[in-house]
Image (cartoon, rainbow, N blue to C red; front, side, top):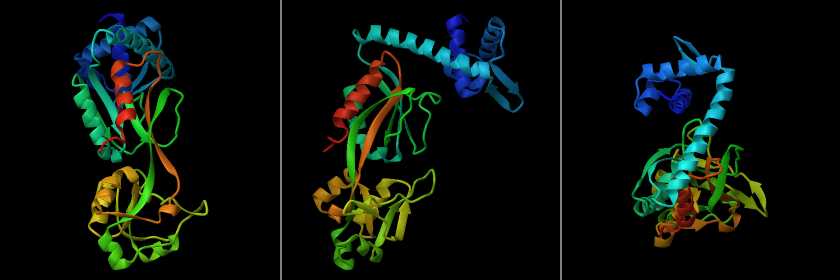
Length: 296
C-alpha cells in the first residue's frame, strides 16, 4: 500500500475505531489496515493508537496527525472534484443527516433525486447533535443558529409555528382567544427524543413570552403523529407552519391565537469547510435552498 493509501487507512481506522470496519469500507483486510498503520507509526516514530482488548483510541499525537491527514485528503479530493466538475455531472454517494422532522422535507429531497440521478443518497434521520466531520457526513440540515468553526453553513429556509386544531374539536371544546384559555384544552405536545423534554410553545403577550400550563392529551417524538392527532380532533397542537400548511389550506386544521405566536425557526445546511466544495454538496445545498419550501 502506498503512502496515500496508508493515510486513508489511518483516517478510516481513526473514524471507525476498528481495523475490521476500516478494511470493510476500503475493500481491504483488517490485516492490511493494521500493517499500513504499523508502517506509518514506524516511519513517524510515534504511536498513533492505544490498543487493548477493549478496543482502540487515538493517542494525543494520533489525534493531531488525524487532523492533518484529513486536510491533506480533503484537499486532494477537492482538487480532483474541481477538475471533474466542469466535465461531469455531480455524482457519487452523498451522506446527509436530517432532523426527524425531515420526513416533511422529503418532497424537496425527491425533486433533488430526480434532478441528479447520478447522486446516491444515504440519509440519516436523527435529532441528536451529530459530529459532521467525525461521523463522515457530507451535509447536515438542522434548525437553529449553532455554529462550528470547522463547518461552512448556509441558511436554506425559515419557518414559523402555528397553533392548530380541527374545526370539529373547536366546535366541541371552544376556540381559545387568549393564551390563558389553553389551560382548558387538550394539548398535543412534541417531545424531544434526545432529552425527553416537551418543546415549549412560543406564546407571547405584547412581545413577552408566557407559559400557560398545558394539559397533555398526548405527546410524540416526531411531528407527523401530532398532525394526524390534531386532524382527528384529539386536541390542539403547536407545529411548524410548513408541517400543517396543506391541512390548513384544505380546512382539516384551523389556526388559533395567531397574534400570540412568536419566534421564527431557521433551517441551515452545514458541511465540512474546505477551499473547494464538492459538486455533489454544492448542488444539494443550492437545490434545498431553492426548493425546501416550494413543495406545493
